[in-house]
Length: 257
Image (cartoon, rainbow, N blue to C red; front, side):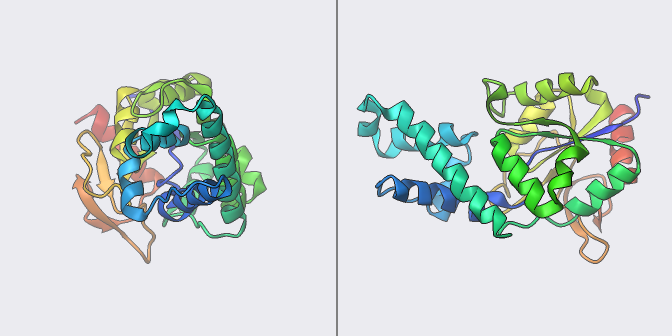
């Protein structure tokens, strides 16, 4: 049996509920800054989350709702500028402490570090977003907790393609059976599974109801002793909290079903 030695985390929606109250209003502030009357409300943004990557999401929205913008010779430049503006607004929200970690995240990270496990991140959000979230929620020193932070445009194909996870595994120098991935969405799960990773999913408001076939377990969150998770799928106790021992148990189930 290959021992588990690494936990790999997605960021948006997994470490923190960043989408609804972080990225969405930041996009809207960027649009306003550039004099655009575009408005991404909560339901619309939920639909746009089917497209992975901020710049890709803008292009998809414009193609469907403002196709005349595609004819602008400077459209690609506008997309880049909008995304940079959105990132600035998002980091300002983080610095205000407006986006806390999800239940159980800090506890599990601390326990994993004490147990000597390697921590890593695999996300399509920008490196700036990752470092800002970690610094404001866990402290600046937390950036050193993660051996590999695979983020942004370091690979051409975004989730659900497996590229970001394959890049992280190569950078870590490990094989997929040595790691457990944490995701919150169908696209993220498909990405991790395509890279051969056993995956635990913690759903959120936007991803509830998506297809999580292939996930080892689907939970409401990672849980706390005084705030246990709710089990939606998988062979775990109906309520509890995710620990290093539970992660190892999930991996043992994978290798010996």
